[in-house]
Length: 436
Image 1 (cartoon, rainbow, N blue to C red):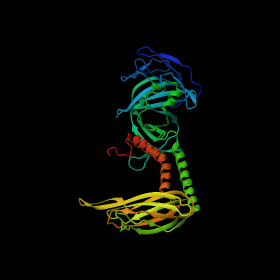
Image 2 (cartoon, one colour):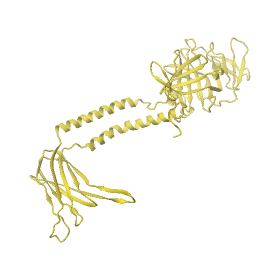
Image 3 (cartoon, rainbow, N blue to C red):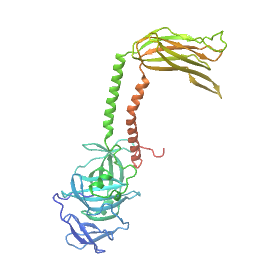
Image 4 (cartoon, one colour):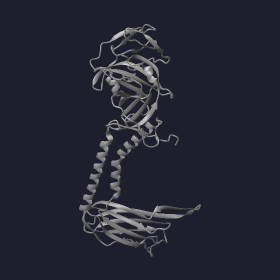
């Protein structure tokens, strides 16, 4: 990378000839640039002070197409700028390749665009120096005034190709140890050579923003894939707002439930135990119907009828009617209970349930009783309890509403966690065990 050149208006362009193939090279930082990469033969040379050009190397690995051509003008970070240099690099000890674009801004200062796997960063030099510190395991951090960054990658780089102009010898970058610290969507970069260190700050830029900034065709740039090192898991910033909204919604829901419970308190209307009694003189198997005592309902109310039967490898069917004593209006329902158990293959098993319930909504005020018509297997006598409650706390409804409220935050949280796991799976400084 490079430090800033003196500020001012961007200088007019000039041209020089490549010392190897004589191709004309247009450059824009007339006073600042001294190193050049030929787009035709990929010779990299030094030229300054009207002296003879000094060929430094010829890149064997050449780039056939530069997605953002040299000389392209754009508007980014609130000002106009021009692409004046292009580099393709790789990690010295790993096969990872990326590209870097030198941007000469309208104020005369340099910035960079870096692209890897279709993910883009806008990089600027900063004057401050920072100190890395270690906590536990593979965790190394750098703290700035704004945020804390964690070490993501450390490597040396090899220059594979370079086109355009530079105000420093980019081949010297191969001696640098580069450390990248991330706090998505930001990155802090340290370039160190011995006791000297230079620092840069980068932020994530969407693929579509690059297209807009430089007026490019959508298919010109590489398609993003994977999760970028500083790609935000929540690019629209929904997480914090969603947490606040969900928290307030939960509080409001609980307050509403508390008000309803206070204004319409729950109370027990009826609780009795009965037993099935067969009709002895009946030609078919039948059981005596049961008529419960009368109970008062203060409506409109929600009623629950809770049933519990003492079943042991038995079944019980309970058709019943809730009848208004004044109007004769009837509410019909049927509940079937069964419970079986045993032991097989050395293990206990059971199926069914001894309990069940029914919920009746908007029951008007009045006096009511239940007619129950029990049925079970011939020869069985089953004891069962019937409990009627008015305006009970319906926890299932509250839980369903709470789950629905938390569903989208849970999905977004899972997506953020997946992003982070995918992100850190590409780092040598991750706490994630990729062998699991």
